[in-house]
Image: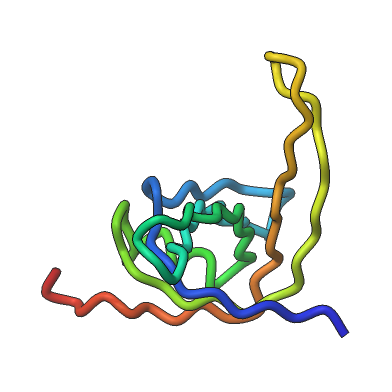
Length: 103
């Protein structure tokens, strides 16, 4: 079983795009802060499909706090400066909006 739960803030506005004729995907970037002030944040790329993704695009914005549950995939890539970096990609099953609606 591969299931991850994260709570963090969006680092940019959600991006919704059409995939085929009847599917949509919303891409989010979520920063999860470390437990201490000195620890670094961890960044996750999150994909949210169809109706839930459309709601994310409609109600979320940069800075919104969310809880995401889904499967995680780790991949590595070569950065332009020659260093090897890792990417944490989450395929969301559920997204809970934690920022109050008035904000």
